[in-house]
Image (cartoon, rainbow, N blue to C red; front, side):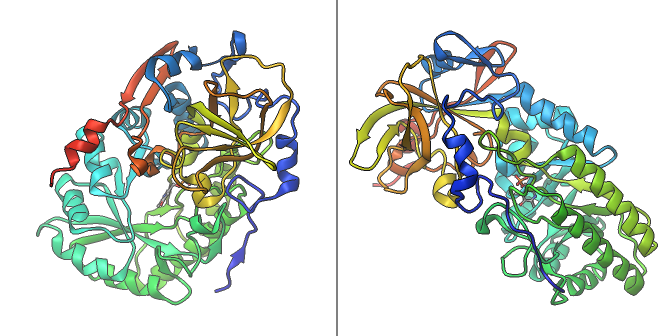
Length: 462
Ligand SMILES: *Cc1c(COP(=O)(O)O)cnc(C)c1O
């Protein structure tokens, strides 16, 4: 099977593209454009901004910095627009993008299901009251603990990712019961904002390849296990995909495999899970995937492919993570130092790669904004760096901030809701920032700041 190469658009995680970056980077009024901010964002006096009616400088004063803000209304609105766009489909939120108990609660209330990748994510959601039948367990290397927790709590479906998992899972299912499973298939499609987040090709660790027949082989083995019930095929092409074509190609390839399964085994699979990966804009002017348009085209492709193959249309499942929570989050930092060298100006803040490793991992670009005071100075090119002991601890390279930016200033970074805190670390024992929810003019603490006491309490030996 050939691989469809879809060149990544010059997006945030794409290859650095000076020409694509120019319109944003050269904007005369840095950050004046609020297009990538939560939809509730409004300007206030003195250069402040309000999200959901809550002043950002007020949040910084009350909760300290660095801090993460989550617009509850924005998260909920994104859930609803997914359900509207993908009417009749099942929408699962990918917990790995960001999970806390409040988030699980919002997702459950809005009627979405949940994708989890570990016993930790699973138990946090279930102990918050998330309905287990709406939970799907993923993972290329599920631990015995993960599988035990999934079976004990009764998750809706488990996605089989490797051949060795089949017998192990089948044996762990209590006699007399059956576990619904999907098979993660590698369709041979290269898509996604960066090589490290492309998972649809044959040269990476996830899933079972159609090309070399390992998917077909695994399916035959699963169908032979009386404790497993194969309900469908799954694929996840990657993350930060900004075009529709790879998803439509995946639909065709998965329906093709479903047709072969029907021919060979006489089994019609009722579900097709297309995964997530829907791209968002991190800076004004960047491309984002149009979810409503994607939904229409996927639906049309699915109907057409199934008709051509003589199959009933399976129930569609999608798994957005980033697109649900990314644009609803804002990171707040305090400037600690400004260093002007011969070639560059470094603006150092009180967070960094321990709360946002994405620029270091994938070279992602952000558009930070000075808040809390108006500056008469013209915009100058700066590099916003963190406080960690690595030269690669860069939060935003090649951005423009007022020339008089100085210690004590506040910087706010939009589109900070996904894959920041969920990937945060304890590096330098700085402590992970708190998460503050804003809704209807009120701010409330969801997750408190990690303290020295937290580090001490885990450190039990001497
Ligand atoms: C990461 C992941 C998702 C979500 O990806 P986003 O890019 O955040 O939408 C969905 N499904 C699976 C299996 C994943 O691994």
